[in-house]
Amino acid sequence: MDCTYENAAAARGFTSICGVDEAGRGPLAGPVYAAAVILPPEFEIPGLNDSKKLSEKKRDQLFDVIRAQAVAYAVASVDERVIDEINILQATFLAMRKAVEALPVPADYAIIDGNRMPPLAIPGETLIKGDALSPSVAAASILAKVSRDRFLLELDARYPEYQFAKHKGYGTKLHYEMLAQYGPSPCHRRTFLKNLYR
Image (cartoon, rainbow, N blue to C red; front, side, top):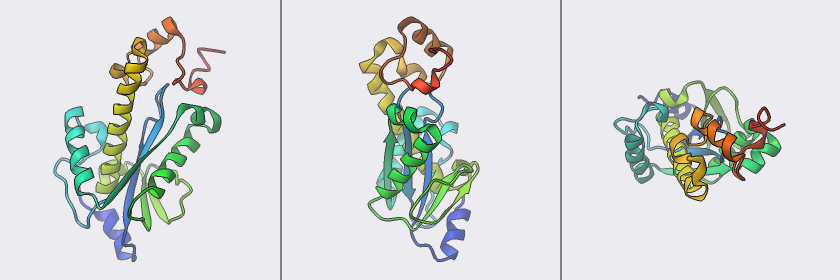
């Protein structure tokens, strides 16, 4: 994966370019996560790709490599209560903004995965399939995904009956079966369950 988009931003005078991506927009439970990552110029991490295309083992390996070698990174989350209050799109934007603002080295430009721009204090661009086209977005994708998956393991320990470790909160057959048996837990997104619980 080359740095075409990062280089284009650098050519326009930006010096601290972060990639931003989210994890967990679709699940029925738990927070939505976002990460922001600034990589060194022309930096390559072998195997870096969209987190969804990598095995869990590979994501875990790259998680450590990215954190060790990035110029800066930050991970943020917005929980299910806020998701229910402001909707998932706005909660995702909030998580992205929190991640960018938490970077220990301030970014001056952001490349956002997707086609919707969150309200940021810095300029940026959206990039559809950015996690497969931009190294910094791919890195953010991995940090967000691994961070969220690890949090879901904590939820699994707290609410073992829902088997979050297996489905990570997504609307799988198993998850719906557990919901039918036990009803929603405190970490479920009520607005995502409106068809089940009227």
